[in-house]
Image: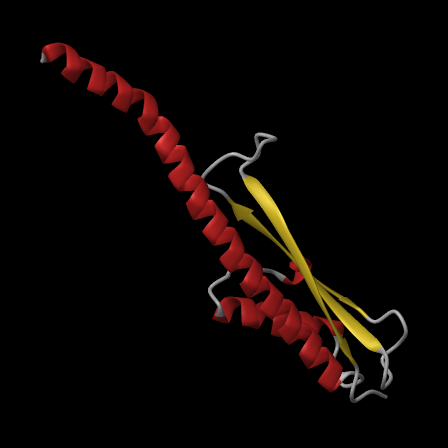
Length: 132
């Protein structure tokens, strides 16, 4: 009887760390998915704002709009420097504007490279409706 109880304790001690790592990895995966969806909406809102107000707003105002959307969804760490606005063909009707967003997120578990921070990147592109 005592021998099997000791064996159970050893098995528990060996499997507990693995179970905890798997649990934390699942939590990280959920957090990454939620953050990606939120950042995609941030990029989409910035591109939408730029496409509807092209020629009347500055890039800083577009970045501010994207940052405000991030704050509204709970990502208060997003700054203007994380938002890039591109209009390579100009700001006239029918051209496209792209908003790229990057956001560093800290994980509970380590990546295979030993780092605990991953930078999520996403972008959204829309056609300019109102331009110069």
